Length: 214
Ligand code: GTP
Ligand code: MG
Image (cartoon, rainbow, N blue to C red; front, side):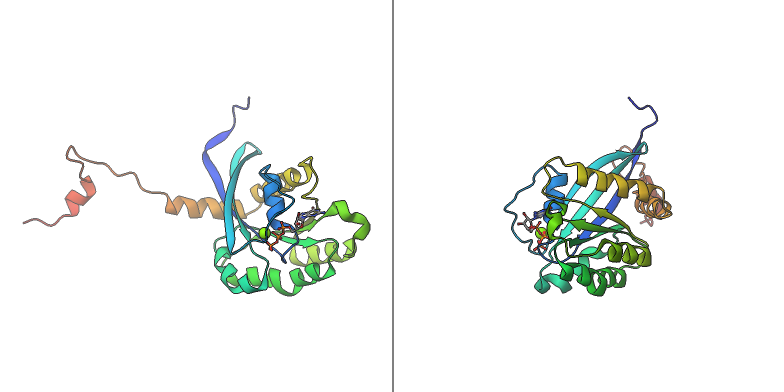
């Protein structure tokens, strides 16, 4: 049991997952939630889910927005990028195009829609198909350096769940140790509802004082 666990102020971290259709975004989330479906349907619009993790004695709630990769949803998807703190840029290691599109479209699209810094993480999915790999790791690493993003190679298909669990653990640790945590905590403090004192009739004392007489 960990007595130092800070449960009072969980870190609510909006996380978006973007990349071409078919790279495995939904499968990664489903694997993370232990709901992997090999016959996953293409996402329409976006879907939301969350998962709580304990990382470095802090509770972190990943509020995950899984977006659709199909071209027809591209403009509508940008509304889900607002206020994101973490962005997973996912490509398929067997599809050069999916990596090229991260560089030419997905990264810029998220940066353009956001008014603040975001922790980007590059994810090469489908590592179980390593013999069909067409994207050179050295190109991915170089691009990761360029945009200041770490790279993870995973397989959503792998039944051990280890890749996806490690991925979120790594991102969580990185986030907690980044200046973005302070930014998030300051923002959530300003949104927190003030406690309101009520009198016996249930009226806010502050309201009563402010109410003009007669
Ligand atoms: P959109 O919702 O259209 O944007 O696609 P998506 O990125 O969410 O892809 P999805 O998760 O629907 O996966 C597309 C296909 O790839 C499905 O048939 C998955 O079963 C398959 N797939 C996903 N991850 C893996 C993986 O790690 N390995 C292999 N071999 N197949 C995978
Ligand atoms: Mg999907």
